[in-house]
Amino acid sequence: MGEQKDQRWIILVVFGVIAVGVVAAVLISRSGGSSSSDTSATTAAGANGCKKVEAPEPKEVSLKAPKQSVKPGEELTAVVQTSCGTFDIALDTKRAPKTTNSFAYLAEEGFYDDLTFHRIVPEFVIQGGDPLGDGTGGPGYKVVEKPPANLAYTKGVVAMAKSSAEPPGTSGSQFYVVTGADAGLPPEYALVGKVSKGLSVVERIGELGTPSEEPKQTVLIEKITIEHG
Image (tube, one colour):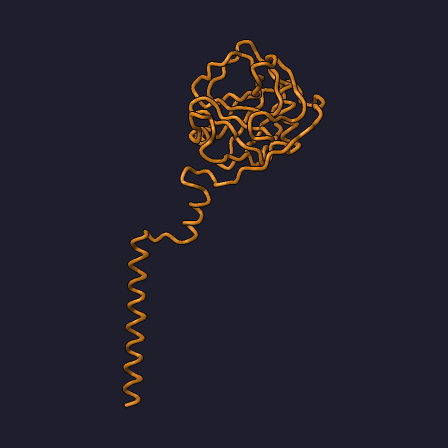
């Protein structure tokens, strides 16, 4: 009798293991076979391809204006790494040597690291580079370089932001990238250059804009690197 009970017990255990395996297989097939690692990766990247990040704390910055080290016509590229991907800016050192010199200086000093695109206007611009994060901050100095009179702020053009009270060509650290076909702005905003690679990333960021100009989610400038040549 004892041996028969043991055999019955073993049979029940085997059937139980098989049943659990069948149920697990059905659940996996219904879920499309996705693993937990796939799910976490999707969550980290976000449905729109942008990582979910926290807004940084505002910070006061006070730097001195840099010496002119950029040579007119020198080939420089700013590689902008963001929480939505990376895009490149071909700096227009020929037409804007002072402005690009300041922009490159701030990038190499790590000034732009962990700042945000605080202003995103659909089909117009994405604007970032403010250490205070509210559109009022800067590096502690100003550069003035009047932009070309025939400059058109078309899609992909990068320029520096300024207040309406400041003279044409005034800039600090805040810059914007045009996302619309033509921003229709007068030639008063200092030229930085034009997006040469990764325009789809700029457009992705632009899709996070709202009528109030406040982004739907935080978009972080992780780092800007200057490449020579």
